[in-house]
Image (tube, rainbow, N blue to C red):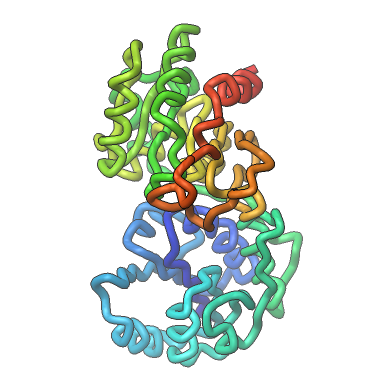
Length: 331
């Protein structure tokens, strides 16, 4: 049997798809399992023992027509799509895959042979995705895996040692986000870092090159000297830094799900988004948020600018609120 999982959403979404992939392989151990994802899927699924093949699709560069043609040649028996895009629906339909499972809220959902309800009712994304498996003839809940996993080689695992760090001796801080309104304040991050370091904690700041400007604003206000690795590590190297931290402080973004994959406790800072969307830490974590604001949520992903120009969902979150959760997890 040949099975295809279609997930071309964001990095965090892809990490949260790993339990679905593992569960599929346990339900059909003799199957040939393919994952179709964006280019960063190469990093997320590297060394993953449950994936037989990875298809990389970059919609900004690659031809959808060629993708369909290639999928037809593969003759897949089953396709499952946690991604709710129109493209996913029609690509799988036109690829002549006989059994196609997706969500009822997906674009062109009528093109699926089986649909599952999708609701933003507090159900975690992992559990929501795993519901798709119930449409399979061999479904067995005892074989379902709920924990996300990332797999590092021994060399990748030890990468954190390049900075003279000791495992579980430091706190990782991820201030960045693709969506500007999902970033907590410069002053909030700065005060948190300074307070932690005054108390003797070692702090490592992580992020991509896209986060450098924002992090530099934070560092300009920080009196202490945290280790700044922003823009200095690739994704697999970042996995190592996160895995060996004793705690992660992050906005509602992909590093949260990296940490959960390695059983690292998380303090997750929420602004324009809400827990009801289902992307909160799956385990070992706290969410810090301002409840009762009528403007929340203002969107599924946040925005570049606050729609009402106040950004009070983040401005009202204090360093003390974040530190309270940090100390609970450290204890």
